[in-house]
Image (cartoon, rainbow, N blue to C red):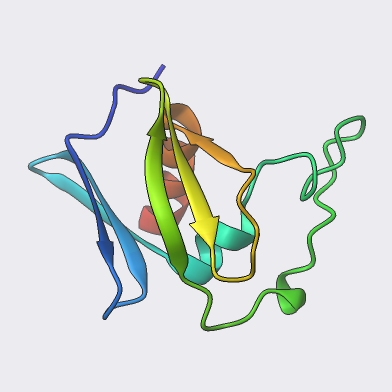
Length: 103
C-alpha cells in the first residue's frame, strides 16, 4: 500500500499534476493522461473492468477545476469537461506515476 504523497501541486502552465513521493521521486502527470485514466464507474465498466472512456473524446486542453482530498487515501479531481466522480487513491496514483516514469 502506497503512503500518501509528501506534496501535490497543480502546475497549470505545464499542464500537469506534480506528485512528490519523496525528495528523490517527483513525478509530473499530464492532465490529459490523468483524465483518461479515471477509475470511476462512468469511465470503466464495473463488471468487466474494461475502460469505456475513449481518450479521443477527452479534450487535449483538459484541466482540473478543483482538486481535493477524499479522506486520507485519495485525491478527488474535478475536470473542465464537467467530470468529477473519479477518486485517485494513493495506490492508483503511485501506479500511474510508475507508468509515467517508465515512459
